[in-house]
Image: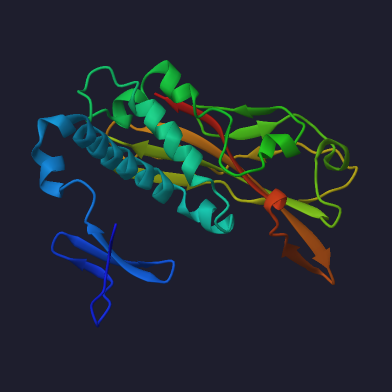
Length: 252
């Protein structure tokens, strides 16, 4: 490794040489890395180009999905886990048995039984709605309505000691990955006390949205806790107080 002995020590890159400081000494080395033109044209980097193209396709579809649930993401204060979702999108894309490597499509992979099944019961936050709610839920795929059996919140929910109320909301998201379109339909949120009174949930204001094309449908359910104080409700923002699940996913 060459050392600099010039009057003015350098850092940075000039031509094919990289100047840097290490252990109090100024040094110089040949610039490393692979030339961009070689990556784009050399046959030896064909697989690298395929991976780059596939990454771009998956990133575009993931962005489309995240845009479709942006309202929920805002309510969750950034707690939606993007990295695991990105890995799942890659798994679904590789179920595309029609396209060439580097051009595998979510729009095709998600129409496979295994592809759509990956999303059913999928938590989008570190804590799951269904971990906090010990009750059976039903999804009517024809109407988009989510309903529950009768349950007692104080005994069939896992909730923080400071919580006095819980808020739940459902939504049906339709994403046309081929046409790059999405629409979402929300139910009215339910805000209810955590007590011993039995109740039944029904989120019946939602409708099945139609973005055109051949969409895939995701039924989302959120659960957020609140604290009642002096006549007002205050949302609790810790991680276990804000949960979001894909309750169901299907293709029509």
